[in-house]
Image (cartoon, rainbow over all chains, first blue to last red; front, side, top):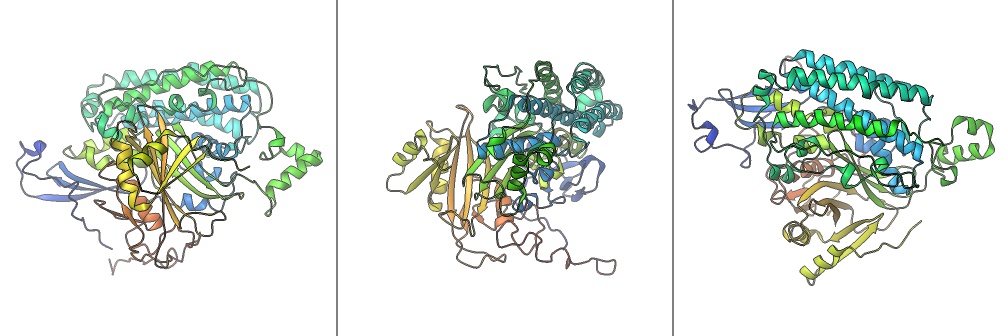
Length: 429
Length: 185
């Protein structure tokens, strides 16, 4: 079916009144350009229908859904552990953060308190995922604006983080690492894990961040192409439901790690009065593409600081919450070696058994790298969710796209997309 | 496992006092309070919650659409919408829920006059895509929405896939998709 632009009063621009067009000779010659879905700067598959006046954007209409795979529908036929394989594939730049947020919601529904060891490991990997995501975003922001070197600096370290994910879970990209009430497995060796993590946060990541900052922060081309581009005011950020670095770069001081704390961001996380990890919520006032870049760079450093506070005090003990909670799948040694383990395994696996959550609805959100990643979970008391509504941060962050691109030049589109960090798999689900 | 919900959230009383004569219900689970309103009152209640200084829920976090066909527990209607509000100043989350029932069979894409609620795009511009997603997935229309088109699926998709009477494997859309070749393009 051929695509037709539909009239849209809310977004169309009156060429006679729009201030940015005042100095522009309107040739009356509007032309329509399809940007994407296959374009290197769209990172995956995004399509923008641009109505251009010369090289100025008069209207930008995003079309999404090219990667829609029915993730929310699949949640209704997969049980609480199986669905982690799907959420891993949403924000594939930081898959482990999705796993942790998903099981955070499930555990809120069941009312499970995790063991201190599990909380520390999850927090460390949660922050690793943030570093992973921000590194790709900032590196690719350089790449889109022709600084290819920056991309390589950032990607180099991401590889090493993937190695760490591979070490703890056996898979590099889609680790499916968490389980209801615990983890798929404990880390293989504490000393090795600590060495790998320390190597990253003390050497590799700071080096890459330093290199990126020296390359881009005062780079004339990079600054010119990002400063004042895609400006979002504080009020707009609130009205358009933006979260994460996008909102914080516009001066909205909201970070769920502080505002509704979970895992080790909460005081007394180990039950013995441990303090919450300390960090600073990074924010800026400018609200342009450059501010979003700088906020992300600073958040990488904060994430390193959070991991540094935890890495030397990983508590001993089990990673799975205790067996009498009847929700954790026992490890294979127990299944084959003890009658209780075998019974528990069958209770959760048999088709007429499974989890018995309360019949209720619960919303749980965590601060993922792009913002508030929430799950609205409706349970009918069975082993599968009745309905899972994902609140994908990208989806809402991207919805402001048509508003902030109006009046910019065609070449600014890539700078803006890069600064929003749209992950199409999460956008379309 | 069922516990009695504690309905002591201050907003319940505030809304009730502001709208005398209207029916409200409330529920609570794990510290999250949900106000259940009639679909006709939805817009005015949300407007009150946003603009009243004592409420000040200025941030709309999400709109979740739910289909309760054959849900084992008692529900107020076939479909429900849950508005997830945040007050940034007090750092508080509050949920507003409404239920609607269809008047026509739900297995197609017919425009059911019963499945319409007022759009909140005038209160939060960011609701635009959220409402488009609910429309796309469940077929609930929003009155006053500036641009109510499908968002994730293509425009002539013959179903609303998150309805419970829509099968997981689809109704053959994938197999019978129109093929465009060089002669017909």
